[in-house]
Image (cartoon, rainbow, N blue to C red; front, side):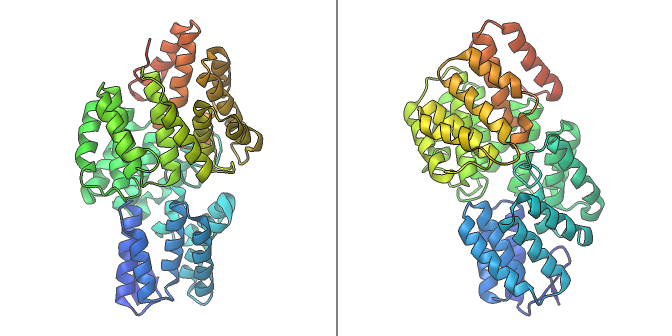
Amino acid sequence: MLHDRYGFGLTTASSEARDAYVAGVDLSLSANRGAECEFRRAIASDAGLAVAHAALARTLQIEHKPEEAKAVVARARELASILPHRERSHVNALATVVDGGSVAGLAAVKEHLAAYPRDAMVLAPCTGVFGLIGFSGRAGREAELLAFLTPFADVYGQDWWFTSALAFAQVEVGEIERARATIERSLAHYPRNAHGAHIRAHVYYEAGEREAGLDYLQNWWRDYPKESLLHCHVTWHIALWQLALGRREEAWRLFRAHLRPGASTGPPINTLSDCASFLLRAEMAGEARAPELWGELSRYASQWFPSPGIAFADVHGALAHAFAGDADALARIVDRAKGPARDVVAPLAHAFSAFSRSDWAAAGAELEAIMSSHERIGGSRAQRDLIEYALVVCLLRTGRAGEARGLITMRRRQSGADGWPIQGL
């Protein structure tokens, strides 16, 4: 019997199908270009390889192609019905992630991992800040993710993918030096793991090491194809560091060439959140508002996220609509918010609306009310710093400079991260 890289048997007699599937898994786990192509190549070599269909469906879901993903995963379920238990359970777990929602998906994944803990493609949807736990809407989900992953450490050993995922969980709870050691071990085994490079950037960010982080990530990014999953988001990190270090022309060049709608090749959720975050941070640093860019982003948000449901996307969509002046689109998010973090979405939408009008008191009141719970929208600490910096601006503009500086100082004590260069601070 042929096996995958993690030692599991695959029901196929085609070495070509097995090799393409294994290659696709590694490309998927490392966020490198070509995973979809390899999974399709595996299916072309053996149309009955159910795990390749499931992996392709999960890839399409990440690429924000839900209907195609559901069609592919339905075929995976059909094929898996006669397979050995491990493959049948593997397909069921990924299929439930694709078409069953996050709650059912997480339950199916946990059931599978109880029997097959080293099945990385099934564990992967749980990891990261956009995963089943990261987007659960639960309070304490950062600590929950680390607690969930830690027991798998002995099973995976020094596996480059797992150690990178573990490092991200560590840095998100503030264990910066522990995360640094973990991610260095991971990258030593596979330096071109884009998730690993991204996570190392978060370590630099949380440690306040702007120059070192920028130098590392720029060098790594030069050979990272633009069509790859994380290209937009890795570029966002570079652009933010350039902006924070006063290299504003270069930051804007990166935004226009790689981040904005039409230039980004990343998943829509990254394009939306990274652009909205960059534009607001630029304003807070003293850049003039760019109405045409906000308008472009607002239209993009309406196109790709017409119905609320993913809190992280909804919050950034609300930000874009507020600054573009699209009251109807903003109202849709406020009125129709749903999902486990819906009670955090509306206050943030109201806050960004007031912020866009320079109603600092109203914006500050909304932000202060959710400051202890904004973790629930998902995303990383680095991404959610935007909310804290927005509050800092409101405090400054309402004559509460001491409280503004105190908020920045508290964030530095928590992680060592530098504060954003806010005009007037």
